[in-house]
Amino acid sequence: MIERNAEIESSAAVRREAKIPTSILIDEHNQAYRKAWALLQGEIEVEGRQTGRDVARRSRQRLEEARSLFVKVLQIRPDNWSAMWGLGKISQRFGEYEDALTWFKKAAEIEWQNPDVAREASICALRLGRGGDALLFAEEAAKLRPQDWGLYANWALALLVNGRTRRAREVAAHAVEGAPQDPVSRRVLALIVNLEASDGPVPKNLDEIEQLIARSG
Image 1 (cartoon, rainbow, N blue to C red):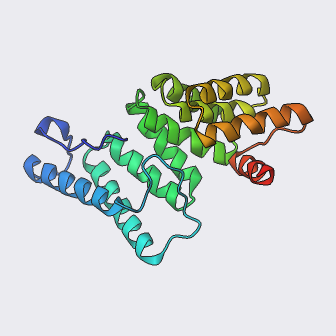
Image 2: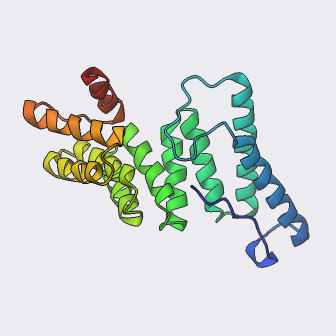
């Protein structure tokens, strides 16, 4: 779960250029921050891959309002990585993967030891076919949270799109060993094993991976 405790608690956290009392800026920041996250409740999956191909009108309005509020938060406190992560999740929900990856990368520059940030960056990079970024963030996420076997499955997929099939199989097998009943890890391992056996071309992005898994049943 992403940590959302990024409200300003002291005036030292605000670097302001406008001649506005610091206490007012702090209140504005925290109110905007809290409201943005409240608007996102039920609209995004914090640890999921929900995308925005079909976003209902009411949901779109809530997401756009939250987006504006997070931008306001960053105008007051440019280093609020949690607001960046929120903007990434909104962009991801809308299917705007380039923007989402940009925000997740910005968040990772600040909160580089958070596996949730690295995971979302890797998923967006996979969706875009950015193999290098996908592998960098997926491996980092798995190492930061070594008992989260789903992160190993993501790492295996990142290895796969980079053409490192053998290593991908090893990492996927490790995920299945750690969580034998996890259907996602099992499907990832089966996909890699089938690709090795058929000597077929490796998928280039997450869409191609999902198509292959769907065909295999």
